[in-house]
Length: 623
Ligand SMILES: Nc1ncnc2c1ncn2[C@@H]1O[C@H](COP(=O)(O)OP(=O)(O)OP(=O)(O)O)[C@@H](O)[C@H]1O
Image (cartoon, rainbow, N blue to C red; front, side, top):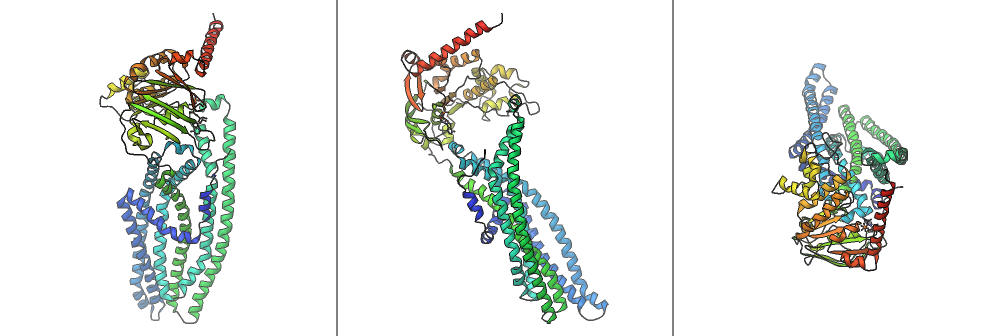
């Protein structure tokens, strides 16, 4: 079992990283990191830039001071006068070092302030981006892969501030050293840069190898987080124990980790080999540069004092070139992750919602016309040529076998999905032309898998959107859903946190949660009420009450009910029977129960199984 990038497009992008790309990308990366830093903390960003600029100037001054000191000390004359001549340069050197140390501390302070802010900002931008995509995006492997990569990009955003800072610092120190070195002799600077090139190439290649290894492990890492979630959280804790699955899951986790370790080890070995070759070439290059200095000194082309300055300048420039290359390579790798992040934000993984602007009100009529719907990667359509009209004040029930398309149809009616072909129109306006946020204001949905939000009972009902009538409206919705008794039994009533793993939180039973989910939908007072298996976890009495109340609740709403509890369907005005994604029957309960067809067949099975259960209970129950 593996998650793989089926398109391989990002691997191709990673493979194309070359020295030229790096040079092209670096300024963009610095700009991008500064833009994000500016967004989260302007004062710290300006402070950082100022510190770096001043540190660069001080570095240059320090090198000039070294040159002055050496020239003063190495010229002829008595020691006293030589020291007297040297002291202003020494004082400048000491002053510059002291201020640079202070600036270094300030840079560390400001960076540590900015780093977490940037990562969190990037994460929040990603979360906001995810909320803007079409629901169908989650069915696409490419979207999930890109989102995962973008998440990684958001996490490493903070690194970019350090890398950006190191780049600016190395560039400033390179410039300072280069100016001084060029002043000593014009041949030294180009020679040094040429000598550093092999190392630079090796570093970039090693960074590419590491990025590609990470890319290959992306799917495995994703699987690890899925496994970790299942092993860690209480959601499946009971099933892991009762199913004695712990060893199996840990084994799969271990196997996946081994796969990642193997990739990492190969990348580390390859990277080390490249670095070694680069270091050897760099060493030879350095020897050539030092030989050039000795040659220039021996042939009298430079003085001893200038040769001394050259030594310091060479060290500074050499260090900054190495720094530039290694930080540059790291920054390019981070930049690739950030490309994943910003690319995802730009086009929301290619699934940004682009619908119309019509602001839908509570619908009078929802028409489904010749709707066919395909899920991504499926050969067969989930729905084929379905036509149907839903009206306010009417309860329409969808029934059929598992997988016959009931939930899909309810999601199309709610505008959560747009049909592959055909139209769903709310009062004549296709859902594709409606403003989705305004449309969903009119949708109250209880899906099969309703969310159990780790929020207070009140927020679980209001979904964070309280009504003007405050708790009165919450209590009315709870009463309609039979959740009033659930809330009353909670330690702090509506204020109770519904998550036992948190301090003071309380846990509800499956049926109690379902009542809260129903209260949520009743509280919303939207124009469309969609109930997908709303009573699956309810006891018979609670179920009976819900179906009883549905009639009065439906007076002002379009109601769509999906259920397998056929015996309760007398409450519906119309029943639509789906089979293999097609409508095969439509009518009232009485009509369908009398007609030959799938509904009567299903109803017969349910009555038979209920009777069998009843018999079993009767004969099997202890006296
Ligand atoms: N997100 C999805 N991605 C791909 N295929 C899907 C997705 N959701 C549903 N399907 C497929 O579409 C078909 C219809 O599924 P749907 O959930 O609408 O059926 P249903 O009638 O509601 O089933 P059930 O009674 O089991 O809830 C099934 O073949 C299912 O595998």
